[in-house]
Amino acid sequence: MNRNRFFILTTLSILVTIVTLVVAQRKKSTDDLFVRYIVDGKKQDIKFYWKNEKQENFKSIRNLKNWLDQKHKKLLFAMNAGMYKQDNSPQGLFIENQKQITPLDTTTGNGNFYLKPNGVFYITVDNLPTICTTTNFIDNRKVKYATQSGPMLVIDGQIHSAFKKGSANLNIRNGVGILPDNKIIFAMSKREINFYDFADYFKKMGCKNALYLDGLVSRTYLPEQNWIQTDGNFGVIIGITTDQN
Image (cartoon, rainbow, N blue to C red; front, side, top):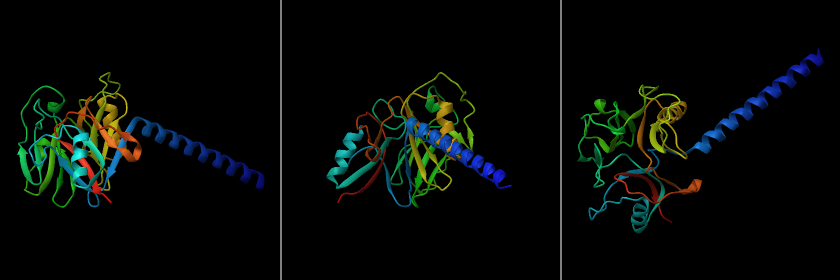
């Protein structure tokens, strides 16, 4: 009886060890593929940036960081926040400090932005994050920041129906999702990835809705993970800051 019990306990211990190693390896593989940053909008200072007080486009993360340094703000995280036109103006909706700078784009066209449904990522005046399809977006004057992009990656818990598993359409991509605890997850692939796998990442993280922000030109600044990209030529940039000591 004791020998059987010992055998069962040993077997269970081995199985637990194997499962632990497999989970750890999968997590490591995921961490190797993406740079990610999770934000609590209730506790962290998140803003969307496009122009400074002189109406000059920031364009790059470096320019934004330098500007914030002058205001004694430390940049903790930054990422390009959607597509833009040749003059660096936002493509589609952009709301800054409750003011609509550019209108919602509900037209049809070519390119990723118009792969319907596209969507809107916004922060309310109560610092609550939401991602919704463009058709479901309503500006109730309580939206503090908003950026429109496309396509949606995850819609009501389902991967966008246009994405194909095993697609050869590979690119660096960045996006944003809302986690079950209402925190925000920003992620950028460290190497080229297709839309399906990128959307699947957000789905596996528990996001019911996630939005593609851009690809190829995507950049992320996250010094705490030794990921420092300060170049770029963007429209809107999302930044997380804290006061400098």
